[in-house]
Image 1 (tube, rainbow, N blue to C red):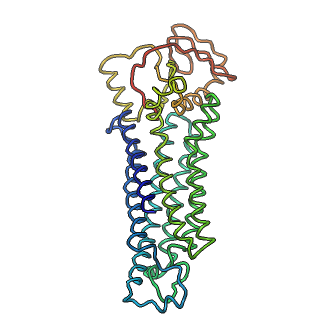
Image 2: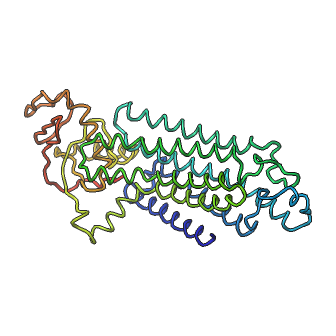
Image 3: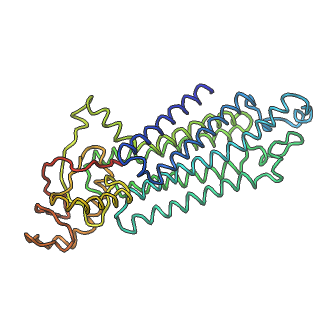
Length: 393
């Protein structure tokens, strides 16, 4: 278990570092957003959680105030080393539940802020789902914390050995904590997965790209699987299931760390793999004009965008040519946003023919004719070199 726990921790921290590296390469450290800082905070709590998982096995030897008969509790003397180990293990279990809840909170908030960044420039109905997610995540976190601190009163009964403090005061197998945590994870994990998927499939991306993006954004389903298995082991075997539950809890947090950071490092991985599979991962450069007031993920954050506009005012007007971006397997989120935005305006533009030298009613100014239809994407693209580096996620 020790080797597995530290191996998973090492991989999780490498993934977090790659996320920071990819974001710094795309927008710079100064332009980090809330999801980046929350991911960094989650790495700190992940370190604490992994340390606690190590201590409960190697310092407390997997012992706590659970898994004992009444006779064993009565016979165990306070001067016995086992008594001390069980007290320490019980305290670690309480600290572990608290750290576990805080870690998942930071990871889920990071994902929600990423979704906000993903939908910048879109309508209220798209972002309202995300704000509801904030309420759901924070509410379930509070419920989990209250379950830990209110399930056992007085609080010090969590490490009471004799007499039997009852199931609620045995943190490793406490049913109030387990059921509350499980319900919180099931509801929030499913909701977080469902936020981007409908938006993705409403877009006009090719089917293969929709499927690939769905896998990346829906990887949180594996967290749900681990949480379910962890709860089942405790419920089926209250005596010996706690140790297996702890093992699956470690795997659950590892998967949560990886899946939260995966969308940000996927473009970096694609760049590294491109020389090996150029035909599979090749990019096609296509130029398109972003709708007025719309900010793609490739455009960075608001602060970056403002500084870019300020620089444009100092250096003069930008080129009249459309914006050029690398359209490839990993530009899904940018294309999703562009497609949905264009779908919002194409009803009003379908009957309007562009007049040379004048602004179309929708405010989109391009140097080439753009045709937008309801049935398919017929925007005419031209080959150009990229004028500005674009952030992939």
